Length: 188
Image (tube, rainbow, N blue to C red):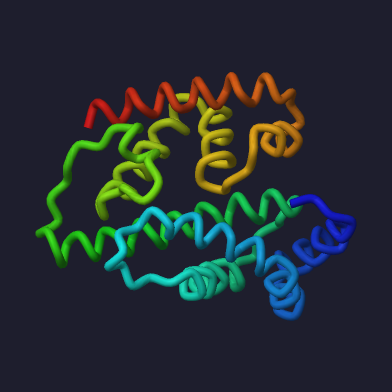
């Protein structure tokens, strides 16, 4: 996610945060491919019958971000927020889908189940999202690493660079975060 135009994107993000709709539109043009990869990754775990498409997810994310006055620090900050917004949209979608199909019942989820590609039940995303909120309460730095790596799709090296820490520390925080997340999920 690093390129020579990052300074231009950061400037546009600052302008967009101050309400410049043209800058918001330009940011979406420049970052659309990255957002699409993020959306595809988020939707790749949904059941095949799910009707939410990457383009719809990106558009909804854009609508939720564009009219807010957010002081984006940089491109990473934008992607953190976009990842959280997309996660929220997917969680809302899966909750509605679960309510319609299964009567809204909750079930137990383990981290191993939640981490298997293509094998998530519809309600698991909501349970993982709630667990992430609890993880942030317990250890905000570990939760941030899990968010960046798992939900935003960054590598350990990219997480380390983004947070200004060593890759070894990013790996330790990942291990701590996933361990704590597993404990939280086991309690459900």
